Length: 392
Length: 243
Image (cartoon, chains in turn orange, cyan):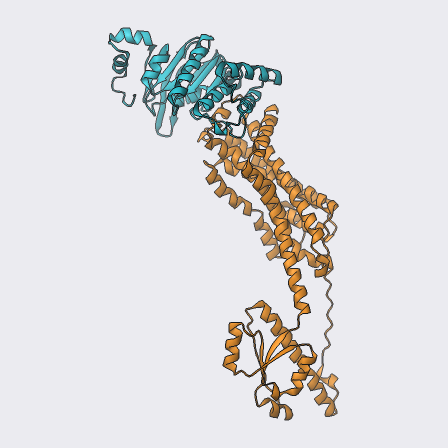
């Protein structure tokens, strides 16, 4: 036990002096997520605000053939640019991006409109461009409402109730709560938190195993009268400590970012104050020894820093798998899923962020399963360290 | 005192060490001489317990390594072939780390470090980080680390490998000082002159077996050779690769 604390203290102090560890554990790992998150959300915000404010632009060709439609479009606030384009010219212009949406009104529009036959118009747009697609959708909507108002007038003129043409009245009710909608955005935040946990311990796990071997201090260490379990325990404990620091910094980063990113403008409210951050910290805590033991175990098998780095980068992706799975199948918090580490933390964190009630049993199962797996990995690590092959 | 009796170790199909027995006495420097791959490191590694012998036994100051390896290790200072330091720790911290893992308390750590620092000449760099150490400074620190718990026996695996002339000279003086203190010094080497210059007793190992185990003096007398080098060559017979 004494050895465990000696090893812990030494690894903790030694890595505190290592710039590489500090940058990855205390800077890049924890702050990458919040910063990226802040940037993305602000960008989304700017975009959506810009979109709703900006009038759509349509290049109108042959407007003379349809003065009624032209007036209607202008009345709807569409910025019209008059032009005279053939269909192929319009296609080329849209493909080039010089015009976003082109509306061509052919010569026969007038006669057919007067004859109450379907009058053709041609809408040219590029649906692979999300920006243009939105403009085209809005143009289609405006054209549709023009068409239906004309249709109603025609029916009325003929003495038919326009209501006959509306057999079904669809009423939509959107039950998404502001916080609920925010969860779509918050979904990947939980991954950044778990990522920060693993990043925090990454270099320490490498340095205390493969690093020990590479710098040639391992054999001297193994020849000391200390139980190998004590050595391994101290190393894993130091890795845990760095992970906790990284986790704390990451959550602090998110709290700060959420202060400055006006999520309400997107119709969301994020439930992330200091209290929630502490709850999230507690939820992630059992994941810490699991990550530390996993990384130490994997790194123990490697011969060099570089090799360890290669393998552990894949370990960083491990927590993404269940989370990706969960979002593909849109899994909800369920007792049986609490047995899966990283997924259970993701689901619990999401629930807390959504301000949903969290069952105490779920929390215990999540923690218990993660800790049990962590214990198993620690035993395996200690057993590996007792092997002669550990010398390499 | 270190006693090895009938130690054997095999790695797969390779018999690395076969039936090796010798005694390294207190107050003497015992050299294990052999070519690269002769089984020197494997033998030493079994003595300090990072490898388990397939058969045979070894005792450190009478303590059986198989029964009480931790107790035996407390009597043993080890300088392995790769004796790397922790670059981000100072020399003092490197020494303290090993000392506290040996179970020394703070007061004893401080006094031992002060003694070793004086004896081995670490004063000028003891509070500097080990990252930029010269070979000489590194070997002195590693030796201090191995000696911090004041062991009666010191095992060194090819300690002069990769050292420059000054560092080798320093090391030689340090080993002689340890011998004068009455400790048992056991070191391996593939350099004959080094063993001849330093050792009281030589164990020559070839292909995992002991070829000769005698005092330097008796080897010289027995062979009747004029120079020590020739005497060695006669003992070695067909063993190749010893420089």
